[in-house]
Image (cartoon, rainbow, N blue to C red; front, side, top):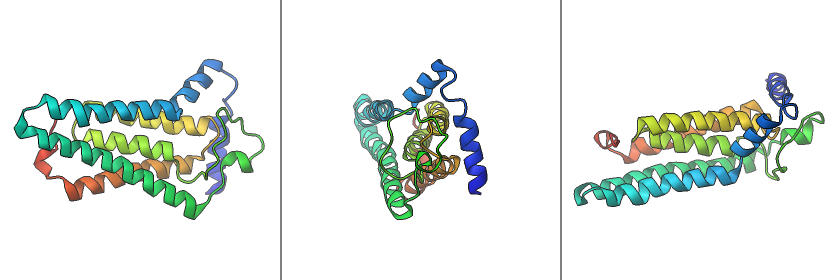
Length: 186
């Protein structure tokens, strides 16, 4: 499995450095600042705008919705940090000499991808309330995952497991804390 994982990484990362606009695009997409701003905008929309835009009867439900989305993202982040500590899998650039790393070198472990997990958790949480915005966020999460491989800081398996955790943890939180009929916000 490690061999296929490495071959895919080397294939995707092999394009890095040859087409400057693509390099800039993937460097920007994988930026923690961009992901943080996106998360803050969505948090403000669900946590501030929607609760106060709606009538009093629905306000508490919207605040609960925002808490469930945020809780899914936070729980995913905690799970990722713990897994990185316990598994301690090295970043690909520490093992493979021929990679082109396009971003500053992260100093934590590789498995699983936190960027992929967090963007997927955000997409999963939002999708349950707003399908159109959720679909856009799923596309964004996929691009972020590809960017993490392209810029040379994650193996494909890191990204795939990050996606899986970013999907499953928010779905579990929603399963246990949300009534099925309250998931239809548009």
